[in-house]
Image (cartoon, rainbow, N blue to C red; front, side, top):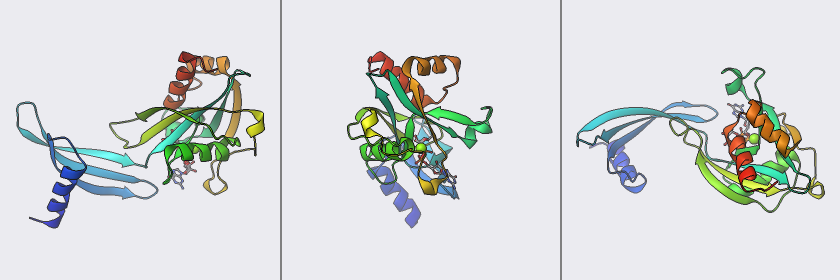
Length: 208
Ligand SMILES: Nc1nc2c(ncn2[C@@H]2O[C@H](COP(=O)(O)OP(=O)(O)O[C@H]3O[C@H](CO)[C@@H](O)[C@H](O)[C@@H]3O)[C@@H](O)[C@H]2O)c(=O)[nH]1
Ligand SMILES: [Mg+2]
């Protein structure tokens, strides 16, 4: 019995709570900016037999995103930035309109989303409201994305935003009429899932 086997068994018992999954082994395929792992495991079928399966999972940590809205003005604040993965897969020009979002980097989701709001949009907000916890791409990406909404107004504007200096983000800040933003969802101009979910949530709950 090797140490790796023992380690994997312990991992199974402590962290993984599915009795139909066993002998989970992890191999790092790429560990550059984020990590791509390959998991090999045994999966118990409904007839009781065990089959060996392999799945790759991209681990870039967890993230948080927020829809900033102003109910008096009827507006929302969104961001616009170049997203390479979309550029190479059918998004002409590669620009994406998204709610403000970022990776947790060790922070709790609420603190992360406040920090990202200030960095990316220039608004210093304190009150944020958690709405959902989502897996955006559960077949391939491990990430949990925590979704929030929060009110902003002009008194909270402390800088131009644009993203962290050291991250070459080049983020453009957009303040849009809420109905205009909903039209952009319908037309396909807004095509980012977290953004669509949060805009629809705002519509359903009549936030704006
Ligand atoms: N050098 C380098 N830099 C990278 C790489 N990938 C990301 N970065 C830098 O790291 C920054 C991370 O910025 P965050 O604001 O923390 O994350 P995000 O990319 O905006 O993440 C949000 O959007 C994602 C896509 O929808 C979400 O997956 C994520 O949860 C979050 O919502 C990027 O903007 C970029 O500057 C890379 O492969 N190489
Ligand atoms: Mg971001």
